[in-house]
View (cartoon, rainbow, N blue to C red):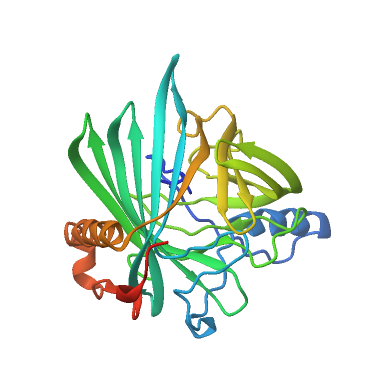
Length: 301
């Protein structure tokens, strides 16, 4: 989610090619090898009819309650330099129709060394089975706090496909799954696997039990570059780590604070998310985001 929001995913400039293998007349061993390879390239089957009240995301591991702000702190390793990092993720009270499905809009801002590095809005929806889908994102890039440009992908447009951000019942040992696909220039090819469950993890915001560990990676970064995300029930991800040789994945973040926004603060977040949307050329071909019904009556704790 600024992926990762945290960063829920990483991008690469390398060309990513989705390959579909169709095999005929192979020996059984060759066929199995091809099927295994094809499985690693398979996108998730998406059915817009399998969504009902989809902007209400209450998945145990990935809840998105409007008005919730999560603050993460850590660092990124850039060459030999350790750069302080902070990510602020806000679940807005906006919903946007993407690929025929109402999504909830999440706004993420990444700070490096105290300055804005990325700001993005991301679109999630939960299907009837409880899986949370990623249906697109708009990322704006900043340099020394100055806006430099952005890029976007929207499921169902320009060859892009939605993916699953969190399974309804994530278990170690299940096959990897696609977190979405976007062709160049965005190059989104992230996949995920569930590595561990039942972990105990402590971060500045507190200690959590029954933590789920998910490994993410992409073709552009290569098999040796992996991002680790730790998800606590009822909260979402509480920690981000990395392993391998990937340069873009060398980020460590820990949940430092959970805030319930006041109505005024939520209104400001809503307004900023709408401004980001207006700046994106791609959204000229999609319905604008709208405030959720009843959201105006939300009360601060």
